[in-house]
Image 1 (cartoon, helix red, strand yellow):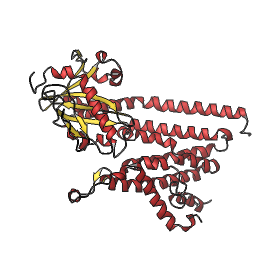
Image 2 (spheres, rainbow over the protein chains, first blue to last red):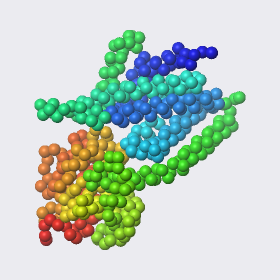
Image 3 (cartoon, chains in turn cyan, brown):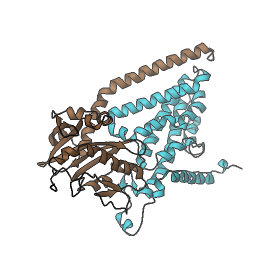
Amino acid sequence: MSKLISDKTKAVFLGPLSKNNPITVQVLGICSALAVTAKLEPALVMGLSVTIIVAFSNVIISLLRNTIPNRIRIIVQLVVVAALVTIVSEILKAFAYDVSVQLSVYIGLIITNCILMGRLEAFAMSNKPWESFVDGLGNGFGYAWILVVVAFFRELLGSGTLLGLRVIPQAVYDAGYVNNGLMILPPMALILVACIIWVHRARNKELQEK
Amino acid sequence: MNTNKNSYTLIYATVMVVIVALMLALVSSSLKGIQTANVELDKKKQILSSLNISLEGQDAAALYDKYIVKELVINSKAEVLSDVKGDAFKLDYIKELAKKIEERQLPLYIAEVEGVTKYIIPLRGAGLWGPIWGYIALNEDRNSVYGTFFSHASETPGLGAEIAYPAFQQQFVGKRIFNDSNDFVSIAVMKAGQVSDKQDQIDAISGGTITSKGVEQMLLNCIGQYEAYLKISNGGTEE
């Protein structure tokens, strides 16, 4: 019997957090990374929801992988993802109404997140359920931490708050400091993601193109 | 098994769709009751928010029964169509707004806060990406604003979405919707630095101009429907 978490599984989990990060290396899911990172809170919930949905849709597709007809496999994947997203959104509406009101748009956006289809097609279609589940968690967290970092800087510099709480004291504003309005606009998300990619590649020589 | 045959593909797709449809229908119908209750409770919370009542750890339904003393259904000519509690609450405001103004049934909530009457008017309009809505509470003079509540479906966080925060909403307190000669002028939402000479104004959200203008338009349209009723005993100035 192999141990519960083999080295391969560990690599599957840790890869997406850094060297195979969905956003900075695979450049998937950029669209939502731009859309939900003006504030920290939606970025956190989006990261969490994507993690849950990617993990479970990976498991379902992995269980079905030998039965799915090749020609309609994308449709099957889409149906699984859409069904999961709808169920999550319905459950939120019933048991966490306030959260669901805040996030209605973002929950719907998960369906269009390229990471989901990317992982289903590239991993779950050819791997066992447990590895697929771990791969989903890894990619979800890999996606989430980039979102959180970007949102942290955008909210801090753009609004002077974190999770809606004021962190830059009034005295600083009185001394002439102003919030950087550009931070809230979508282009700054691109620039921040680019900065993360830059640092990331500078530290990992093998990622650099020759 | 050959999974590439046409018949297999068709059967697979059909079975999958039926299973998923059944599952979603089951989830949806079993959660329906809780969801409707949530929506109603949320509406009560929104109405109470416009009265600046803190809902932290409180039972919103009980507070609603305590503060909202009357619910009226009126029309644009100020005739009261119903004063049975629940009628106004159940009205589908969006459907009413789609009708001609003379045919609309308008909900009006009358609250009593510390012995003083407040009039609450529901609002509904368009922001940049989707609908925006809210409630505005007027003082006993049916002119000055006591409190507001705004919300939105999909405005940009940090920009248009700021209308849902107190910093924006508190600006309305004390502003008047009728001018000195008792004409209905609503309240202007202006860019910082611009001044409206016709009416009271508040500051728009920088970077959220379209949403801010949406709020201005929403106030003008929705409060406008109640003009006749509000004028009946509009305290301020005499004709």
